[in-house]
Amino acid sequence: MKLSDFDFDLPEELIATRPARPRSSARLLLAEGEATRDLHVFDLPDILRPGDLMVLNDTRVIPARLTGTRRRATSQGDTQAQIEVTLLEARADGTWAALAKPMKKVRDGETIVFSPELSADVAGRGDGQLHLAFSLSGEDFDRALNEAGAMPLPPYIAARRAADAQDREDYQTVFARRAGAVAAPTASLHFDAALLDKIARRGVRFAHVTLHVGAGTFLPVKVDDVTTHRMHAEWGEVTQEAADAINAAKAEGGRIVAVGTTALRLIESAATEGGIAPWRGETDIFIYPGFRFRVADGLMTNFHLPKSTLMMLVSALMGRERIMALYAHAIAERYRFFSYGDASLLFPQRMDKPL
Image (cartoon, rainbow, N blue to C red; front, side, top):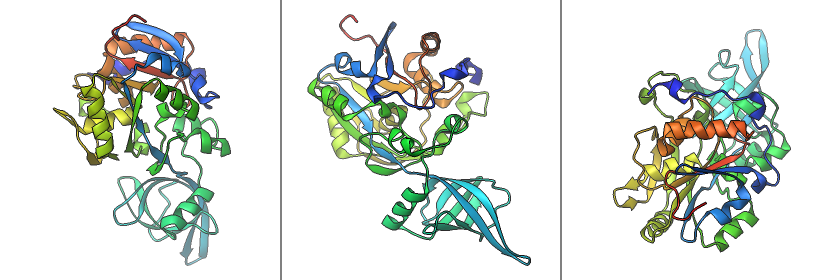
């Protein structure tokens, strides 16, 4: 498998920079086996069957993008310079791993001031990242970060506009509860409370899992032989309650529909030969064609970047030729792509009644 096998041409105007409003009005490309329909997210209650179970990622995106001022004492006096920082993850020693722009001029021991309440010392570095020791911790840190930070929009949106107050709502799921992600589980952005209620009244159940999405989700694949690519690790948890709900649904003949590639990667990380078990830790699972799915029967997901690991994941589920045909259809029909774009609902097998 070569990286070029997962490439396609995307017109730039199809890259969404704002979401559909209301959330559930986004378009939905339904693919079941070889059957295809153009629908909307609000049609989900009519698509899903009683007994199906949707797996939702309840991670909460933190306002991880910060603008600050570097301060360093020199023989000529204090120097100051602007810097942009994107937090990646909290480290075991209490510091935060972060990307910085510019990075090269930053020195260990410098202080970066982000607001009158929040600053950080550069405690070290590694793997192209800074290690920042913040002046606050716990709830005080959360409060100050919420005031000083901006939502970490994906690079393809950030290159077109800055994050604003509206993104605080738009780039967060309505069921987010466990803070820790620096990127949203974007397929879940299409749900609002009214849609979730309609789906539940259809007889569809939900299981909540947590995968804290990292900035590595946007890293490009740099190897031509995709099987040699190494995924970034992300922290996740499948609770006993979630595992029991998924196993019960499968035992009763319901379909397990992962909402988002993050939820799918997590439940497949927790898969066993007999179903799924409670699981907690870091996963770097890489799903590409040839992967054997043990839990997920279907996937709701947005449309992904060319030559990305997510294109490989959906190709593993549906087959590469089928996915490339679906993406050609989506482009021809002017679907909106990427994080704020439209969605697809993918089932490798057609359901047992005609569409």
